[in-house]
Image (cartoon, rainbow, N blue to C red; front, top):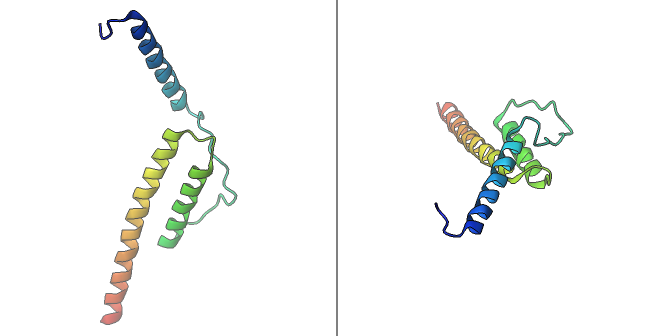
Length: 103
């Protein structure tokens, strides 16, 4: 028994169950509303387009009170990771263009 005090054990059990129910509810499809984006047909053709879309996703996530913190943090980490890869690709494209111009 992890708790010597039965009242403390019951309180910890209730809190544990509350967290499990909240996590299960958040995991249900459609549980987290996705904010509508005004311009839904965004074309991502350049690295600048990708970076702009990541910035938009971050702004929407930070300003949306209906999105739960867990979903918000996952979106922010995912957008940051994708943006970092995109910035690396942009830098590579810039260096490659400079090399091509030099030859």
